[in-house]
Amino acid sequence: MPLARDLIHPSSEEEKRKHKKKRLVQSPNSYFMDVKCPGCYKITTVFSHAQMVVPCVGCATVLCQPTGGKARLTEGRGLHWTPQSCHPHAESSMDVMS
Image: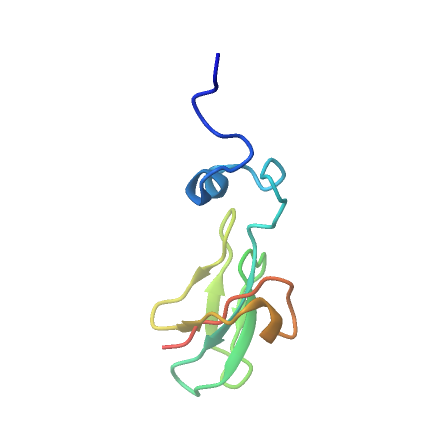
């Protein structure tokens, strides 16, 4: 009796839905991102699951607010994703700018 789905070659969408430890290759759900402040245009590196309020380095405005899981960016903040090898702070990262 054959299986209805392939366990060795799962689809990428199926892998994304799984828990981070139950994937074929374990990988975290978190990432780092560079957030650009619209007031002073300085870039601050923010963790996606930050548990504290992250202020701007230049003008001290709030860039993101913590929630129960991922941090919520304040309105008007730009983001920019970069490849994993280009980011100095993280294994898997995203930078975001507008």
